[in-house]
Image (tube, rainbow, N blue to C red; front, side, top):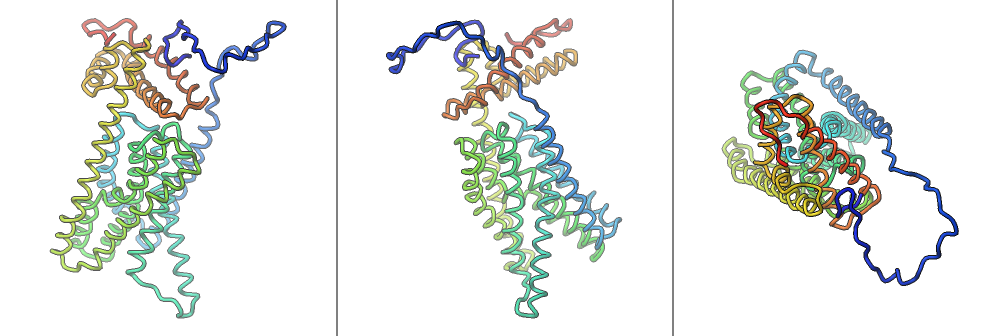
Amino acid sequence: MSLDQPPGHDPAPVQRPEQSLPVQASPAPVQPVWSRPVRPSRAGRIVVAVVGIVLAGLALLVVFVYLTTFLGTGALLFGLLLALLPLAVVLLAVRWIDRWDPEPRPALIFALLWGAGISIFSALVFDLGVQITIAASAGALTGSDFASAVIQAPIVEEVAKGFGVLVLFWAVRRHFGGPVDGIVYATTIAAGFAFSENIQYFGLAMTEGTAQSLGITFLLRGVFSPFAHVTFTICIGLALGLAARRGATKSAAVGYFLLGLVPAIALHALWNGSTFVLAADASVLFYYVVVQVPLFIVAILIVVFLRRQEERITLRRLHEYSQAGWFTPAEVSMLGTGAGRRQALAWGRRQDRPKKLAMRRFIADATRLAFVRDRLVRGQSTPALHAYEARLFQLLMNHRADVLGPTLPGAAPAAR
């Protein structure tokens, strides 16, 4: 399917310098080796997704078993219930960030399990290795709470979380198109990590402290800092998102990963180090207001800016398709603006279920098409990307046919 012409129209021939050399004519007509593109099998991707989710889930199960050994089942369940509250807040933020161009549900599930399971498991194994090394040194090495919290934890935890974002960059490259995607995956991984970590903190506060200490722990971790880990890890997500936007290869993405890892570790070390430097409650609160709140506000502003940039890209690229006949101007306005989408979804809610789903899929696939076009314009043209574009064209024609079918009485027609 041509990028610049609607179905049924052949593009005008373009004269190139190399056409001055004639091609030798074939002595006889040839038989085509294929007549239509073959849709690639999804079996391989499904298997990889299932295996990844299962392995990450098993790692989370191991973490739960480990926590049960010193918390007990009751404290574990109590800590888990409390940890669900800040987790829900962060996941709602992820849903808002990811609303314009939603990521695949399996990828988000894997990201959450990576943070809650594999990242925590990796940090525990590394810490165990450090303790064994210190014990085997016969006093030559000594442990330090400061070194563990300000040096070891930021490095190990951010590497563990950030590597999950890199794995997703490699595994779901088609759906990892820019900084917003990187932020979504990084935030989900960080949310999972904080969830498992909070279970431990809340459980210990319940078993070893008083109700007051439990309340203070929940206030600090569940109210004041549910986005602390998110603020650290989105540095890696942003870096890998820029790698995706610039068409970086899988190997080149490692450099972007390391680039984002540096500020992630620095912010994490700053956060942990403040608890050692600032002992008084008033000092900690002052630090939180002066340092952490501005950092959080900056992160919000970056996310808002990037989301609006996504909307502008969608509108611009769909307008280009509109000029080639793929969309009407009204459809571009409907698909490329927030107000237009809300109107379209409101219309869909008055229809039967198949038509409602068709409208949602029409919006989703049109958005994906816009970002495919953006990658092509940026010089990231590959046969696989062109094949994906052609597939989206076909899906959109099918969705349009479903949307434009018979409407229910009293419902206004969709934009045409």
